[in-house]
Amino acid sequence: TPYKDDENLRDWFRSFAALSLLPIAHMWCGLQHLNRTKPAYANITQFLDYYPHTYGPFGRFPPHMYNHHRNVMPRTINYLEDRHSRMKKHVNAPHPNIYVFIDLLQKEQSLASLARLR
Image 1 (cartoon, rainbow, N blue to C red):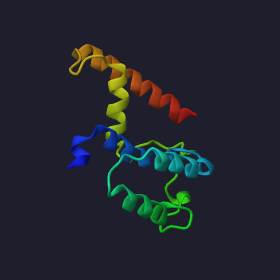
Image 2 (image 1 turned 135 degrees about the vertical axis):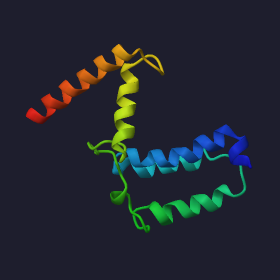
Image 3 (image 1 turned 180 degrees about the vertical axis):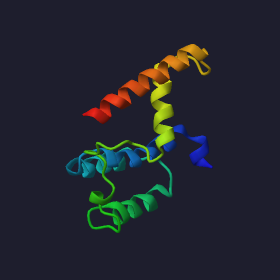
């Protein structure tokens, strides 16, 4: 399929998910930019008609329902996934030495304890 074969097309489609990270006031400009930079495929027009009718200001799912620009909550709903992601940032190896890992767990515990005290 063109989606599998064309990296630019994949990036373009993925950019629609990124629109939800823009301030609501800038989402329309982002959509216009994507419209101007659309890849040359026949079915793209159908998608560009569908998107604003579904996710636009007067669509079935208006931006205030899914916009995450001011979201201060974790970006994942899976607590373990979030924890794993944070740990990976502090460890340079996929399988760290057990003592390095224990030290990391102790630091995480200290940070969690401090956060609870606040």
